[in-house]
Amino acid sequence: MTAPTPPLPLGEEFIQDAHTVAARLRSTAPVRFVELPGGFPVWLVTGHAEARAAVTDPRLSSHGVYDRLERMRLGDGADTESRFAPELARNLLNLDPPDHTRLRSLLTKVFTARAVAPLRPRIEAIADELLDAMEADDAAETPGGAGEHRDLLADYALPLPIRVICELLGVPFADRDRFTAWSRTMVAAGTPDEIGAASLRMAGYLGDLVERKRAHPGEDLLTRLVHVSEDGDRLSRNELISTALVLLTGGFETTVNLIGSGTLALLRHPDQLALLRERPELLPGAVEEFLRYETPNNLSSPRYATEPVELGGVTVPEGHFVMVSWLAANRDVRFAAPDRLDITRPAAGHLAFGHGIHHCVGAPLARLEGEIAFGRLLARFPGLALAAAPENLRWRHSTAMHGLEELPVRLHPAP
Image (cartoon, rainbow, N blue to C red; front, side, top):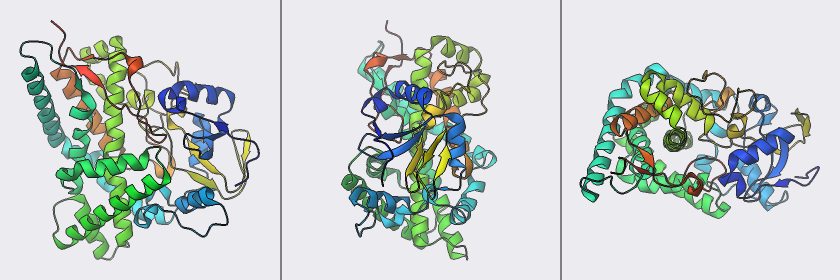
């Protein structure tokens, strides 16, 4: 891949001070040739209008993107395939129509708002169980006092969506540490070898799980997908494995970040926290604002230009990669006072779940989990407070995801 100009290198600041970097890029060039942390050269889209245009332009293709990335890394003349597990390389995130349309059509009806609504009582019960455990642990550590600080991510934001997606898919919750570690390696800014090894382990695990569902059907979504393929649909074994990957990892990564970052945003804006406590009917809109204000997914999956593409006043050369920063687009001046948290803001227009044919199929479930998670948390702990200075908090070392490493909180005010 030959670049027209040297790419702008983006360092650790792109992860730890993402909004400052995004604002600088967006104000100077909403489409800019950059080098992401880890050395990946890409045309980065930071403007809202440009983001919508990029992900709906059929000349920017997702097909076979992992093999192209590996060839770029090793050189155009290399005779190699992606070291990413082949069972996972072709999934919903990197397919074009008609293959993408066929796979997505099997899932869309399962994740509509109406379809996920019956899950509310079970999600509420899981949230309450986790909050009960947090309160019990807090009381045991400091009887009669404010308690030691707790990591809200480890105690609540992470286990809640993992338990939900495990029950929905029929994945053993006891395996959570393994698949969480693999998932986080795959979406982090790790080395190609680390990402490849994690993908192979994940593919092996999901392949075994698919075979167990084939032999011993259960009342879960993965069983339904396995037997739809056996009844004449066109899901191959690899397609089942790759679809399970997208549902499993996508089913918790975004929601973990939503709960953690949304809670941080509220605790840093006491006026908005007080308003939400006073008017709990604002909760659905507040979740939308958290999604916009601290977008859980920073970057889209990569696409490549199948021909020269005009985008945001620049020409992306054929063969070059393009990625959208959803985080940057959601702080565009298209939104009034975009850097202000406003839980009364009209919800329409944010791109936290993407746009176009790759719009997140699980968005209704993530919204439902977010509403329940915030509602239950704030009702249980009216004195919830940060237990660390915001400037000392660290963001996960990932260019793809935007989420905290931990969120220290106190459940009750100090005496």
